[in-house]
Image 1 (cartoon, helix red, strand yellow):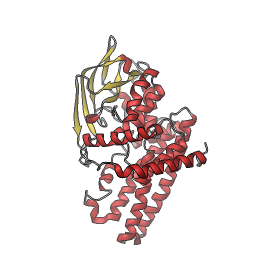
Image 2: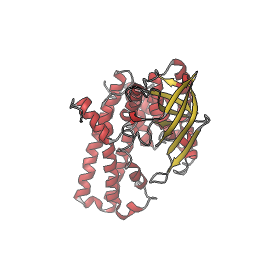
Image 3: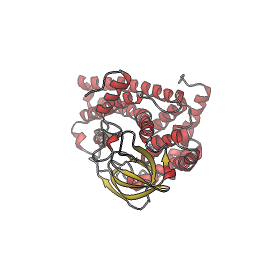
Image 4: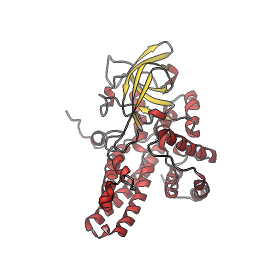
Length: 377
């Protein structure tokens, strides 16, 4: 697919650039990074502005070229990121769009686009992280509802969410992959307990979640009962293949700023630092090309990214860590000051080789599904 800007794309870019220049100065101050209720309000307020201006569905409804233009221009202008809307906008919403019924799409997608509702992700469990299919949270059918008991961990944005994309086991008698079901769970349902987890950076965007006979309507099931693993693969395709594309743009901006800082503070004179910066520049240029390829492939194949997302996730996770390790080398002793730019991002980057599927899992996927290597024993 041709991703070069034509007349329509140039007009879209100019219109978006003008809108950003006019709107961004009117935004309220950013909240404390550790204040997630405040961050939810801020992020949803930004999403509403996008909705009112006609840009809210750029992640789902725009052409690949327009989507990439949107990411480039919003990052260049310093616009807010999706933040608390990450799960709803970038993988739960796209999953519902791809796999949901017309009624489900009508119920759940517009509130996400308007910034009215926030989603969290209830996938991982204490004994089912990388081996996600080993999950034990149980859902028993009782008439027109499932009764759910179990626990989840690393539940992204649970403390501020309205809905949860939840994986449950509805059949324990056969294959562990076969007995899983994908549900949309309202977070105000009785029986849900959320305990925020504090990260190394001091934030609480993750939580433990305990479910004690929580009733979820059968109508909230996306896909068929026991077919949730297939639906989950759709979700993970979005999470690994396209959800991080905006961050690649952000990392390229950080890299340029880092090179400028190195020139100012004298670390540019170190050939080792220059070598690292040059290698990262090539790395992120390649990742941006891979991003374009993944987004284009998703458009051609009906909107769902392919297994090339695992290649992207594997390389991006390590490149992001290398970027912020290089930032520490440039900052020197200031790298210990969490109030300095990039240092909290460095702590956050440590999680990227685990989040959304560990690097070991991604390497296995690449080996088996792309290279055709035999499975390990």
